[in-house]
Image (cartoon, rainbow, N blue to C red; front, side, top):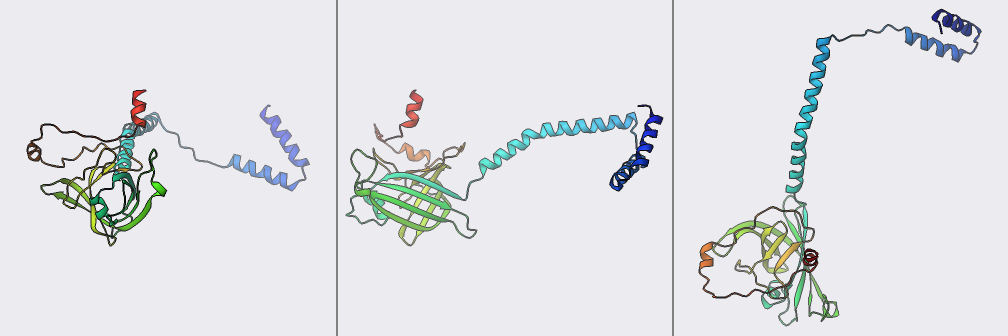
Length: 257
């Protein structure tokens, strides 16, 4: 519509209007429309500078994004939760029964371990060890009569053991319930192996081993430590060595398929 005609119609409309709300709103709109505003226009050189700065910011973000993602993933992988659980089943020989203060006459085919390491307290590291043991129930994975239970609580320390028997990071479990304590060597973030009182690897049998597995394994690229020196290996004069054991079948069956 032509502007003068629109103005005339608008003036007539306002004259006939008696509603104060409508008049107030019309006045407000006209006040906004006619308000003096300072508009600053950029010249071509300034526009070019703004575009260049925006492009540089975008390229910087694109270049830094992989670094940020990599750093985040590394920090997540490197950090360890304050509470870690390890499980496993070990033989029930005389030595381990003595270390766990089980009566020598107790019939123990194997021991099921559930060990939780906790470092949430700033002044000490604590552990809870729950075991289930007894005589194996034939053709099952359990015990006759459900087995017997024992619970141990205490503190643990970590040290570097570099004696002639074994090298590596050693975890020492100490408790008033375990007079001789229990020591384990850390093979990696997912595997711990129980040691004898003389800091030697405990040897399992064809059914069970003395290795504890992390309950919720994590991806670990750590290289297995050199637990002993090469000179120790050269002293072995055996002509033949036989190893036996059992492994989980699920992963093997998946690989076969």
